[in-house]
Image (cartoon, rainbow, N blue to C red):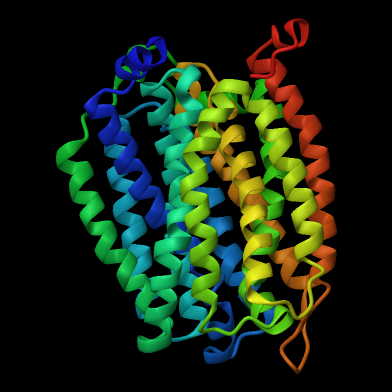
Amino acid sequence: MQTQSTKEKTFSSYQIFVIAILAFLQFTVILDFMVLSPLGALLMDQLDMTTQQFGLVVSAYAFSAGISGLLAAGFADKYDRKKLLLFFYAGFLFGTFLCAIASTHHFLLIARVVTGLFGGVMSSISYAIITDLFKMEVRGRVMGFVQTAFAASQVLGIPVGLVLANHFGWNSPFWMIIGFGSIVGVLILFGMKPVTEHLQVKSAHNVFRHLAQTVSQSRHLVAFATTTLLTTGGFMLMPFSSAFAINNIGISMEKLPLLYGCTGVFSIILGPLIGKLSDKIGKYKTFCIGSVITIIMVAIYNNLGITPLWIVIIISVCMFVGISSRMISATALMTAVPRPQDRGAFMSINSSVQQLSGGIASTIAGLIVVQTPSGALQHYDTLGYVVIGATIVVIGMMHLVNKMVNPQSQSKGHLA
């Protein structure tokens, strides 16, 4: 009874709307980035791109997103978060439009830069809004629901995008994102209330001073360093996952949507449950469990040869359970690091660090992985070992973040 009353008190009908609309927004932003991975095989063939060029196209989004995050950080706490959300989302949809009309490698590269300049800030603004509206005690559950956008982009977006790409060309998924994103933008414009409570808290008036103060705090620096390594895994493995599945594991292009779809279905179901678990047993403990699962599954997946589809699906589902556990719990912990008056700036810089480190990781991955004349990828297992090493180190670094957020955790043995 107490749990239910707490839930009713915490989640009003408007808050449920905010959770839903931010999840749909995240769906379009994440899909825009993730759809490049399964389209990699088509793009490298139709635009005559090498693995290094494709890695640069992927990382171009990350680099531009990182730069925009730093530029926006000083202003992030100076304006209504809803207005910032709409401004950057409009720019993101424009960049996606450029991707849809791209016909050459260089045009696509420029389009990804424009998309990243606006799209890279979306997550930080969304997380700042969530932190403003929801208590830490239920934030893991909220993040679990919002992070289902990651899974929904797999189960709905990527399979549909692949079907469209196979029938109407590789750029058709971007048209799909523009159509869906326009509806989301209208709902935010007319349905979301202004988010301005943070403006009532005194902060540095000078945007550059605000940026400097946010960057210089030691607790923030620990969080940024943790984010840097935390990002390495996904950005190193994702860009070439479709090419590896097709050319090394033996999954046909026609069956690729089934692989992504099955993985996404389980992720959608388990995402909210993982978020609820992190609120119950502790966010750091959930992160550690997810990290162990990720290490085991990456070690298996990155060394696969020709493998039956059903086995690949099982391995992929388990791997994404681990990844989702890390993402949800880590994001919830990070939101508790900054003070309210620094929240927007911290989230923007943290997102920028994430994108920049991801861009570097994607570029390095493109240099490590080599595609043979037969199409098979070499040294993909090496990427796996790098990811495993980074995952182990991040477990220790996340422990420091957990101690900062919950100084009583060490003495009481509680893992927040």
